[in-house]
Image (cartoon, rainbow, N blue to C red):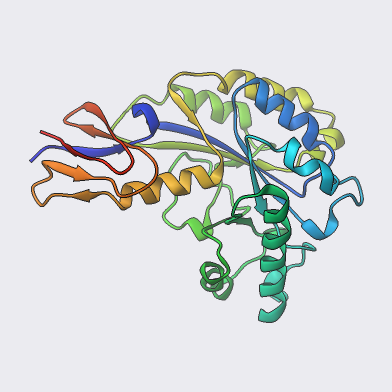
Amino acid sequence: MPKIMMAFPEGKHKVVTMSYDDGRDADRRLVEIFNKNRIKGTFHINSGLLGTDGRIPHEEIESLYKGHEISTHTVTHPTIARSPKEQIIEEVIEDRKRLEEIAGYTVRGLSYPNGSYNQLIKEMLPYLGIEYARTVHSTGNFSMPDDFLEWNPTCHHKRDLMKLAEEFVQLHKKQYLYMMYVWGHSYEFDDDENWDLIESFCEFIGNRNDIWYAANIEIVDYMKAFQNLKFSADSTFVYNPTAISVWLSVDGIIVEVEAGKQIVLV
């Protein structure tokens, strides 16, 4: 039986993803920095607050975040662990509806507003069309999540960002998958007068051939696509019923399993 392991696209074993909340005006500069360095971000937006208090207006959302992911952050940013179920449902569903009207695609992610969540909320989210939800609990490590509805990031950009980046680029053991997940709020760079921090980070971590740069939902979709592969009992062939390619390491050789295709592995 061959030794088979999941790889990221093109056989890579490291992924970088960024996650920024609230849809503030400073996102314009942050998106420009990401684009320059081939980095992808997920932007969690409160649709009920668009255009208010230094936030990006409705008419700019689609064009600004093109190539990145628009995700929910609830309509009005309440502390949802203290909210009734009816309000939680409305805050999430209405945010999805409004953002999908703007984006033109299904919005399936969430970052918990004020970092607020509990087990009941986690259990509700799949019924509201939410497939992942980011917390504010930084791990300081590069592990893949066990639970996408309690997705803990590596770090806030204020916590050892460059130190962790330097550690990340040195990771070389391909028997593991590594993820560096950074979160924050773009307005913090204005408040702290440290745009040079995120610029230096993106210049350092971006444009590398051994790293996959993905939005949050792309990681979720890829992991699910791997889980949906149909292997023969002896793992000598596999069928990919999904709409995206999945890459495998088969006895150390990288193999692409194209969408809708069945291939022999040995």
